[in-house]
Length: 142
Image (tube, rainbow, N blue to C red; front, side, top):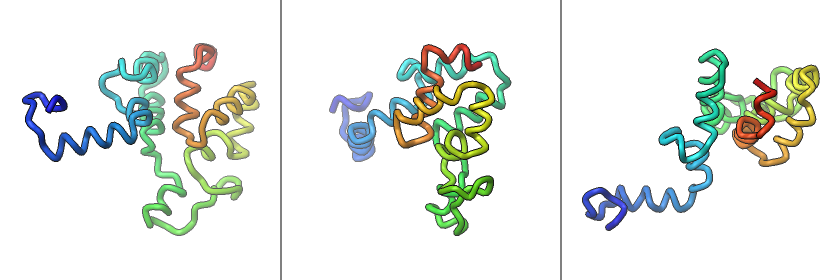
């Protein structure tokens, strides 16, 4: 069994092989170690920004932000609409990119077209942030 260090089959190793097979793209993007798996991690930790911003971005990329939509899916609370604009389910994509208040901020920074492009890459906010942080023009963002 080539998937373990000692070449002995285990249910645990089979589970990880199957999980990797089913979720390989997501896993490579979100797995923090090693950083050579996906350039997002090397990029994220190399930015010259305060640590709390890097940690927040790390939490966003891992989906650890407790947005209302996520909390409702976990049966914590019953209201999933955005408290700022009441314009839809508050998830990572909405709270960071498509909420009216977030869109105003991106517009003031003259990044609204770039953010719109990032939002087209995937429905998930984590994928949009991944796109932004790995984009060649990201240097002008930070």
